[in-house]
Length: 443
Image 1 (cartoon, rainbow, N blue to C red):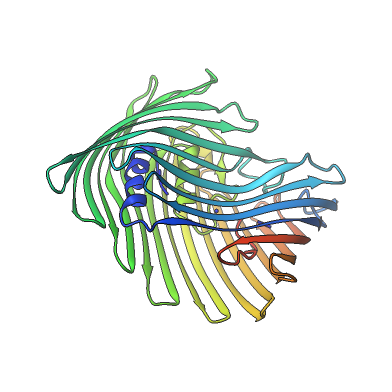
Image 2: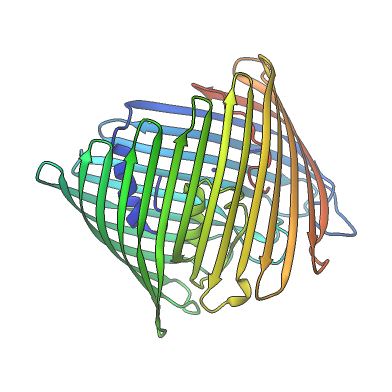
């Protein structure tokens, strides 16, 4: 069953809107599939003993959308599933990720209004196995204007402002953000941009028990849209100060690189270091397409933290066969809630094969290793998945997804094994096939 910009705050988002515009092809592209069916789990509560089985009603949506016109630029990636637990072990839930950016050209190439939304899940208990009882929805919405003025034949100045809202399904961690920034730069060519940026931001929590904070950053941005290489890089420094606390500083690094190694192979690299909160972490992992990222690994807390991540994946598609290899490493160090300090490594491998014109088989394996450095808790979780996609008719097909989860822990308290299976009817639309990718994120 069924993952642009904004890396840490709205500043790279404003720069990223320009990446949407530079050299953008005209027209719209949409590839999507919607499905509905039934599933079964033999251990829905994910415990080591006294397992509970569950029948699951399921609906899902996978969507890739891109729009490029004179007045509208947009990108959206959606991988969502709605689960109804028929035996009432848990309440129904919407899980998965969605991320999208829209830039409306009020005055094309001069005044744009930007809307961005990132949706995922956070863990209310990061030490436990992820279940419907320990995870909750997290949504990060941002909107505001970009004003860009030409300064000579290649130079430009940009002012931008953002209002943002971070909302949790259950935890009292909702917050509002106001952001303002300025950038000076030049465009040596139609496909490249170099800029110097300064940003200031205020984060105010709705609940007075949480501590508000301010954040200021300066950084150099570089964007390149070459024939085989795309680069979006920001490098600088961030200062963060909580109300009543000392000012903390950290390097700001945000680098996304996509390289077409050949007509069949693509390499993607994400490097990120930021001083922020859970909403920032969600957005950076979604936009970086981080291996194993944004899959219920984000901790629900108001405490700011320094996050470092590196992710690398390689895909190869030729003829009727495709391959995937990827790895990522994430470290989170919290300001005061040091019990949540963690290191996570994820490794994934997959292969898909079109067995016939209407039949596709997909295998996926993911290993995640997590260590809470202060709490002394370690765990390994292995996910294996196989999907059979039969396009019975041009726009309608059947999907069979089988998954196995196996988690080990040094404490023995969060260990479990679970097997799942889903049979769904899928409807497809768009210019290309959108097939299920098992194991992309925990459900």
